[in-house]
Each structure stands twice: as C-alpha cells, then as structure tokens.
Amino acid sequence: MTTDIRLAFAHPEERSLASASTDPRDRISLRDHVVEVEIGAFQKERGHKQRVMFNVVVEVRPVTAPLNDDVDRILSYDRITEAIAAELAAERLNLLETLAERVAERILAEPQAMRAFVRIEKLDIGPYKLGVEIVRSRAEVPLRVIGQDGEEAAVHPLVVHLDNAAIAAPDLSTRIDSILARGVPVIFTLGLPDLPRPQTGHRPTQRRVDLLAIEQNAWSLAARDPRCVVVATRTEIDWAIKRGQSVVWAPSKMVLDAVDGPKSADPVALALWLAETMAARGILVHGNVAVPAGSRVPVERA
Image 1 (cartoon, one colour):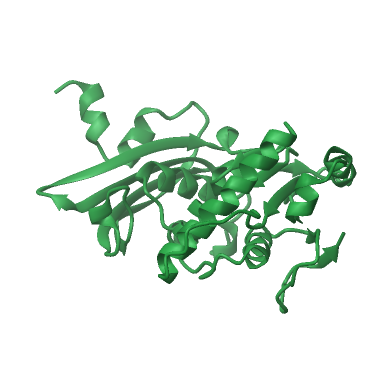
Image 2: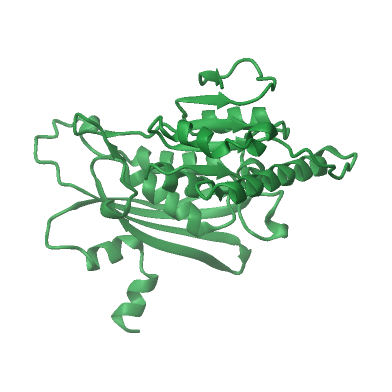
C-alpha cells in the first residue's frame, strides 16, 4: 500500500503530522467519540437515530507563556465535544459533509485553533463504516466584521417582515432603499400569499403546504427587485450577512430541519423565531399583523 493510500485511511492525527508545516504546532485530539443522532438524506434515515463516530484533531498555537497548570490557558477537549453537540442540536442535517464543515468552523472560532481535521463516520448503515473527512484552516473560516476598535465583532442582521401590501406597493423599491440605508444586513421574511391554497385537514401536511406558499411569495418578491435573493439554508444566510448582503428567507428547510423549531407556519411567529435564531438586532414589521408577545428581540412597526 502506497503512503498516500495509507494516509487516506489513517487516523486524522497521522494525517496532521504528515502534512504539518515547518511552524511548530501542538495537537489535541478526540478519538472514537460516538453519539446517536438523526441524520441522513434518505427517507429510511428519518424518524430514528443512528450511531455516528467522530475523530477530530486540532492543531493549536503553542503556548508561549507558562501554563501554570491552568485549564483556561489551553484549548480544552471539552470545546471539541461541545462544538459537536452544539451543531447536532442546531438542526437536523442530511449530509455528513455539512456537519463536518460546521463542526470545523465552530472549532476554528477558538482563538488557539489553527487547523482542524474532522472525520465523521456512520456505523449502522451496513457491515462497514461510511464517512467523510475534511481539513480546514483558520484562513478558510468566513470572515467576521472588524469593528471600529479593530476587534472582530459578530454581525447582527435586521429581520424585516413584509406583508402582501408592501410587496405589491408601487414604491417597493423606494421602501427597500430606505431599509438598506440603515447600513446593516437585512433578512426579509414574508406572509402567506393572497391566493387559494390546498386545505389538507391534517396539521403536519398543512404546515408544509403553508411553508411552500410563503416561499411562493418569496419568489414573487425576488421577481420585483433583483436585490431580493431567495435563500433557504442557514449557511446561505450566514454567508450573505457576513458580507453585508441582504436576502429573502424561504423558510421550509430551516423550519422542518430545526430540532426545536416552530410548530406552526404562522408567518410572523416564523419571523420572530428566525430573528432570535440569528441573534438579530431587531425585527421591523410592515402591515397590520399580530405580533406574538414575549419576543426576545426588539419589535418595530414600519
């Protein structure tokens, strides 16, 4: 077996050593961490959990100051398992590739972390393991906004809920100009269209019908203004807002995949949930719509 093939199946720690740079780095590792989780793109993988095994190696900057046996001076192993647990709790995913990307990104948000090797394998598909492995470095992590003090700062978007009258208004473009003039990334959310839609008489299927109807409205808005780009995933939203761009939310995927998401398709409740999920600075509501009490983000009426 050639060295390249052997390394392809070697533990991430051995691959880390083989591809190390000349700069000295320390390494911490997590081996054979098994959790049960619902994941997978196929229908047979929905509704039940399967065992998934994680092997992770993180290259970290060497500590130059004395450690003094102080756990706060190092990247704790707990940060790796916490990164895995946080991403598994965020939403149900179809792909191991997506999960690996998110775990690596969360780990690389730690100041000491420089490079992360993440291998994830499904153990219950057959008499073998099926998995993916990725390598990500700090330079590949999406950039955060640099504040006026030169420090990295989180981006807090504004969620703007448009009713149907606002979408159809002749001055829609002017309204959007005014909203974007605030100088923050905007996520537009929409209500149900003023059109008949199927009534299933069954709550779970009606919820899906209503979510798809909201997405019809999203595409109608996109047709009226080219700045209204429709997105469906958290990854797309993150990518856009970190670059100061604005988007229109198509809610089906995020809502249906959420581990502890909204149970109805009420448009304003969905907008509030998204605002809380994205740590939005606030939500701007257009139209005479009822806003549920208890929002954890400021609510402003247009």
